[in-house]
Image 1: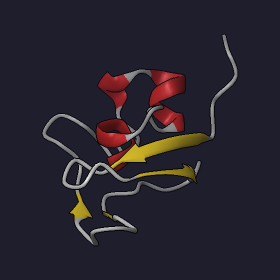
Image 2 (image 1 turned 45 degrees about the vertical axis):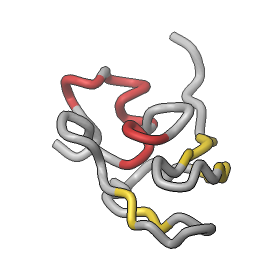
Image 3 (image 1 turned 120 degrees about the vertical axis):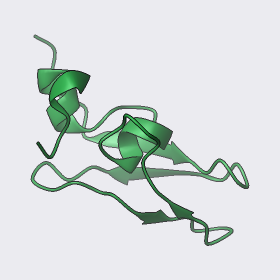
Length: 73
């Protein structure tokens, strides 16, 4: 099994701004405010958090257990 990646680059769907963030390993991130346009990002249907919807890497629990388990279930 490969190592869990803790950094993910979020891309705002509204303005295209990118920001690399360190993902929490013990909590879900349901909302994220874009640093450029101030849009509030929320998970897309079927995703458990903003990293799974807009990040370059899915959240750590999904990396470890797969998308069907989510990160907050």
